[in-house]
Length: 329
Image (cartoon, rainbow, N blue to C red; front, side, top):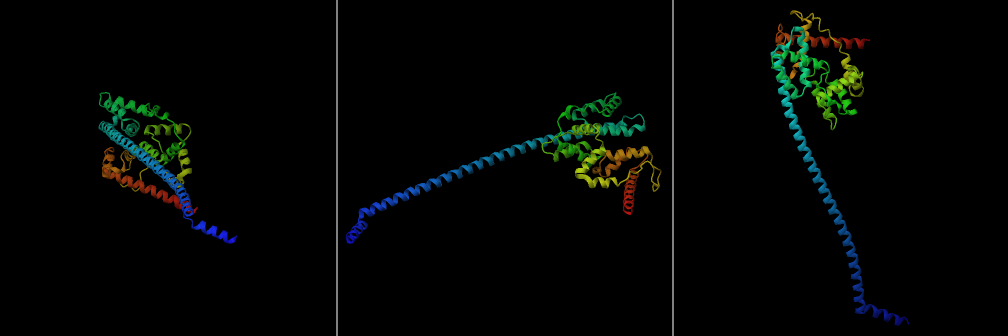
């Protein structure tokens, strides 16, 4: 029986038909397996291509949006630059015609007030308003027109209109508080500088100088005094600045310094000098002192520079004395 079984197995193993059948069955299974693997690879490749295509479209869309935003920003920048040039020209016209007419004063005591009002008008008025005012100042009733504009400015002035009705975010208000502290009164074109400061530090903010000034006045009318604004800002970011500022005691600029070997400066001359320092920034260089001296009939450019240096030294000595006193105590 064992022999017969052995003969059957041997015949089965060497039968070419059986061998061919096994080989075909094996190849069929391998083909199915390979087809399954190829299908999986093809599916993965399809997904990869779809992902690559989606990323390409997303990148192209992003680049398109960035290009459009860049173009929009360039247009806005060009418009702002154009407006800035126009504003600079109109402001120069107002300043020049006021200076040429001695600021339309009736007496010398009005000079400082009128000079300050001219700067306020230049900061607050739009290009069209400045252009209209310039035409008025060229008329026969120029002085009356100028006095009327001063009255408007002093009374809160009707040029601050509904621009400020736009809602202010908490971030914008906080930046306004900081900017009021960083750029104190006397800063050249202060409210434009403050508006630019807010725009740079608060995304999607585009407040104008008029809106900024109106908001600052509104905060003050609601019992937010200047000192309160500074305290609130210092609590956030300017503690060191305020401490150093408080150490500087106010110098009595009315009393002439004992070190001045020339004739003493009067209170009126001192006010003119201070207004001149506010009106003409240090960026003008040597021309600055010539312009300042032109408003002081009895003082030369050298006198103004000397007086300024004297006052700076007085402030430094006061500060040093205060620091020494606090250290010893």
